[in-house]
Length: 96
Image 1 (tube, one colour):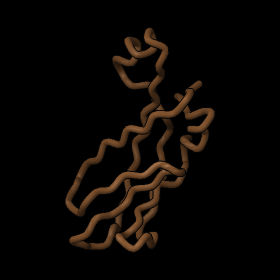
Image 2: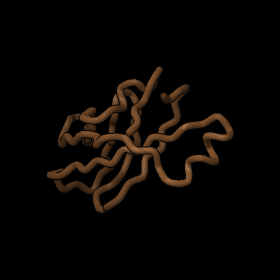
Image 3: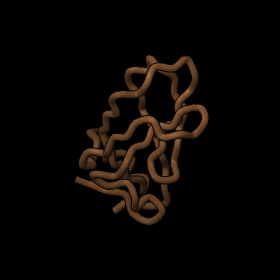
Image 4: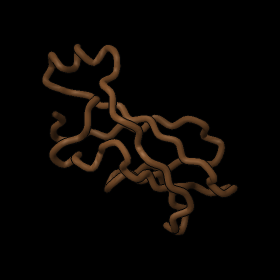
């Protein structure tokens, strides 16, 4: 298991995952699973980087033709309805 540290300290099991509509209103909520070190990350560690992967699921997002914002702590990305799987990559200054 792993978790964020430093500026990424909010990235830990149970952290809130918010979905906001185009107006910025909260429309759905999920949470991060326990972090895990992904396979093949040893090459990155040799370069001084660490990775921690979190899985999450957010259900009951209302139907819309517009964009949504996925927000975890202060990090966010946009997506549209029908994007069944998102990969969100967030870089921070350090990980334990």
